[in-house]
Length: 413
Image (tube, rainbow, N blue to C red; front, side, top):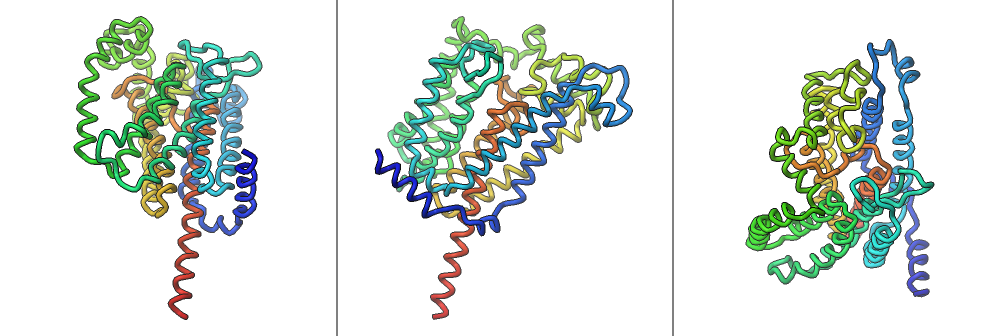
């Protein structure tokens, strides 16, 4: 035990952060993330605005007459997220691979602790560690996303051959399934799906046999029939089953589907250019959409900034994700590449699921929109994920440059 601790601090001493690494900092990715985050603060301000009878005369009047509590808190979480990003960047990413099993075990312990001590919140969920007796708290399964990415990246990177048989994937599935079961038990199915998406993408990019992938897909489709029957006859899953029914036919459940229906009306009412941030009769100010500053923030984006604003945000996400995919291809180190793949998979699932559920293409799962939805746990997780990507890119670029330089010296000699 003590020898591992001494080895840890010796590694840190021998691999201190080199300021020259900043020459390899990926500014395009960082600036896109900051732009999306600041845009999110504006959208949260619009979502939490109170009802007005006329447009504010100017920005000063707008700020004087509207609450800035949630936008201010979101700015604080962005600042905290940037600090978390800096901490993630400071340590060599190889260190996370060396202690992947320790990180994985700590994540399991934190999830178990959450189940034991967390109070039941909205929907009966015990996913938050609350403080001060209030309704604010920290969602441990969010930070667990980074832990599972680090652990799975190490597990996949040490494999010497691709997954060819179903028996090859079973150990990895069990490895992922343990935290997955603990999260479902909270119950937080939305976050559990993120873990599953990260695992599925890593399996896919590891060079898995195509026949095995199709076999798993067919087996999943076949299992949907008994799963549907179970959910239809289980009182405990009635809430989630109703969400699926709402997705299939929202008009048949006008009361339960009010959030989805009003969200889509708000999107349509924004038109091409939107109504503006604080506008008379907006769905945001009237409170017609529950969770409009968190899960359904995309409806407010489209109402306030119109189709143009919604498409611009989606384009910004596309640029961010395309940049991350390109970076994962450029990195030669398997562990570093898998880290970027894991973070990219997490972001893609969040964006696709959130936008899809708001516009009615996917069932509602309570998945926040990265960097835009209000929430500290998710902001910290996303910033840490981007920090991992930047960490890998900076050190990989520095290492590759040094290798080229040393090769050129040998050639000259």
